[in-house]
Structure formats: C-alpha cells, structure tokens
Length: 387
Image (cartoon, rainbow, N blue to C red; front, top):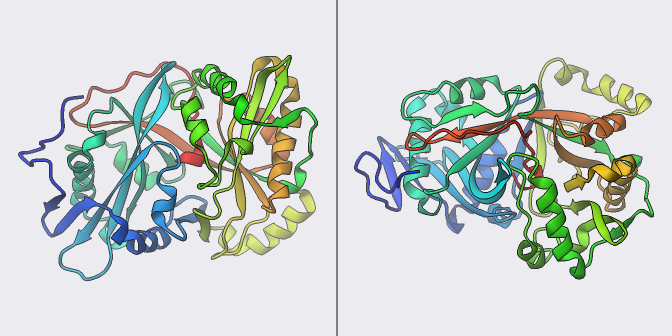
C-alpha cells in the first residue's frame, strides 16, 4: 500500500475539515459524546441493538490490537458528534499467514446526516489521513449485518473516492459469520476440561496457531498476548479452558465476560416481532427458544471466545460446548454468545442448542491507493468478542 500521508494535498495533521464538518481523532475528553452517539444510533437488523460502553468508551477499545477512533462534528451545531468510525490494527491470519490487518468498525452516522453522502465519503478519507499508525496495513476488513441492506448497498457500490467493499467467499456461506445466542441453562459441566494455567501458555499459543491458520481473519493469539492478560477487560489466562489428550491441547475456549465494559441494549424489533414479542416469548418458554428482551433492556450475555476443536476430538464437541455454556451460567448470564463461520463444522453442533442467530457478512475493504486483496477459499472466522 502506498503511503497515504498526503491525500489531495492534505498533509498529515490532527484534523481534517471538509465543508462544515471537522474530522479528528477522539480523545478522553470525547468519552461522553462517544457514548451518547453509540447509545442513540443502533445497528439495524431484525433486532436493533445499540452498543454501549459504560463506564467509559475507552475501557473497551484495546481488547485485541490497537484502536484509533475518528469522530465528525458539524461546525454549525452545538450538539455532540454526528458520526464516528473506529479502525483496529490487529494480527490475523490471511491465506494461512499471520499478518497485521485493519478492521473497520463502529461506523455510525446520525440519521439526519445519512442523506449527505459527502460526510460518509470524507469520513473514510479522514481515516486514511489521520490514522498514521494504520496507513501501511496491507489488508483491511469489516463485518456488516446481512439484513442491513441499505448499508451494504451503499458500501458495496464501489463509488468514486470510497473504499471498495467486497463480500468474502465465493463458495456458498464461506463469507458469512453467524452469531449464536444460546440459553445458559443448557450448560452441563464436563470432567474432560481443565482450567488453563500460566504453564499452558506456550502450548496454547501453538494450538491456536495451527487451528486458526485454517480460516481468514482468525486472530493470531501469541504467547505474549496471553501472558499480558490481567483480567482488566474481563479476561485472564484462567478464563481459558482446555481439553488435553496425552498432555497435548486438543480443544480450547475462553469465557470472556465484558459486561462491565461493553453492553448491548435492545432498541427495537422489526415487524412482526415488534408487535408479537409477548406471544413469541410465551412460545419460546414452552418450546425452549431464547426469549426476546424488552426494548430498553440490556442483553445479558457472556462470550464463548476463541473456541477451537481439533479434528481428532470432534466427538467431544457437544460436551465441550455444554461445559462452556455451564461456565456462562455459573456467572449468572442468561445467554452464551458465540460467533462462528457458517462453514465451521462446530456450527452444526451449535444448531442443536436451538440458538437465536444473527448473520453478518465479512467483507474485505480496499482503499483507493491499495491493490485489491486476493483471498483463497478458506472460510472467514474473525472473533466476535474483539470486533
């Protein structure tokens, strides 16, 4: 990727102005404004969810990799910010090789500004101008709710001066990521698993290196990263659970409780669920489905993160999942949340727990100055707990 320090003659600086809109990097003084924007602007699908960051937005920006957040303000208004976008530099596997890639997330624009295409176009330009530490990343990607057709139609249109968004996977569902919400009461402890210790870190990192290289955008989990986990963001090495055979790790997962730093709140449902939520919940309780929270309620979940099972112990996958779900129940969360490629063989077992599912399309992003990514047929598997 060629150096983007200058775009249309703009030298790298602290802010970028286009018309009445000023784009700049967010700082600690913007904490409250960021939280208000994320609370007000929800993600659109069959359920509208707002992602909230209490007590501080910045407590959850360094979960994995390095985050820079760009905010947009209208000079003509006294109100808080009108839009934002975050970019995260993180180590992932692409075509089987470990590399640093950029993830574009938390793209939010207040509804009254969405008709102004220049705000979105210049917002992307500001990401390139202001994020100097991310300029040279060779690969970029993002995820968009499959049902968010308006956003996908705009971003996939390949418009002038915009980054090119292209859905990953030319092979059926290989570019889809499924987020599954499973009732925690379905958990069952298994004696097959043991809690990870500091002495397991080198072997655990090696296990993930072998397993995750089979997927696009799967995280590169290093021994150093595992050693640095201190529980501040809800995760430590003791939150990992392992299945071993003859002393070798054959399966692993982490129970990642982010409720103290990041929350999802229901802001609405599409028709017909917006009028049928109460009768649906009666049906859900009778037939073992996930009840739908009321509008305004926080979704009470914990992530089952970094789940991986080697081929030679696939027969234990159900017991592994049941044990992971039981850990979620022990921590008094109603739901276990897990994100898997639609092509991941574990997903067939997940479906047996009758989860509610949320589909996202993983897409490669190519900036105007870049050469488009060429991905092989490996299915996508980014970790939803870090997106």
